[in-house]
Length: 71
Image 1 (spheres, rainbow, N blue to C red):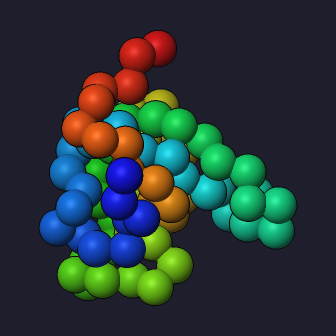
Image 2 (image 1 turned 135 degrees about the horizontal axis):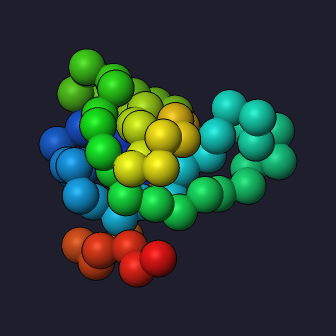
């Protein structure tokens, strides 16, 4: 599993765990499927910001090994 700091490691359809803005203090993770990448730079030290298919926005903390998230 990758850590989500490199944009090249993430693509729409990737299964990831993100931290939402409201959960940054606790570090609570939310799992989902990437709909869009919002960070334009190739690297971000806190994780690439993405929008999930359910509309939630957060920074990627874990990229799951090429598995598609099953609802």
